[in-house]
Image 1 (cartoon, rainbow, N blue to C red):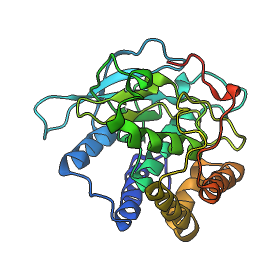
Image 2 (image 1 turned 180 degrees about the vertical axis):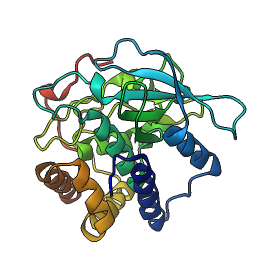
Image 3 (image 1 turned 90 degrees about the vertical axis):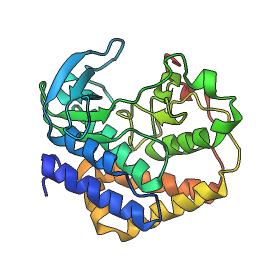
Length: 269
């Protein structure tokens, strides 16, 4: 299967959703399916360039007959990626998609629906735009007790995917009150690259429910040939082995690791 063909992306997402549902995760709504159809197949209208991004990032709108108004999405084209010495050129948009798939398998954190498709500036990732409180970010939200579980999930997810860029502004509070995680292009490197602002759980025990989710993901990585094929398409053997090793180490330690000064991103927001 050509995973980068639009029908291959749809089949990939459906396969992952089926694997997630086998773990008794909630089914997605009909509206979600309608949004997925639009993100994959409907024409995109460019609304503007997002400022302050290191790579070209566009706000786009898409029409869906089921909805009265077009909705917004974030389009990150492959050809707009800035060259990096430590990540393969032209792969960041794929890592955005793969991060979304893993979040679906785990059931956390909240990552907006993300697809791969062709657009005005070529192949890229397209992610549903979430309406958020623009004044909120990790440093304004971290001490809210009701959000602790969601930040525990995000911190653990960043360890799994080896996120090299978890800034405070990549933690959004949606109008629904949920915390949403965005910007996952710098991920899945085989060497330890973690850079994050979420330090409050260092040395704390990983909640049992999250350890159980890690066990389920680890079993899927071993048992599901479909998932293995998907991951092997987007990751090198070294990256895939490192992903499996990180999950194993977290399960064995049962604790969030202690971080070091070099684990802080710049700028922090």
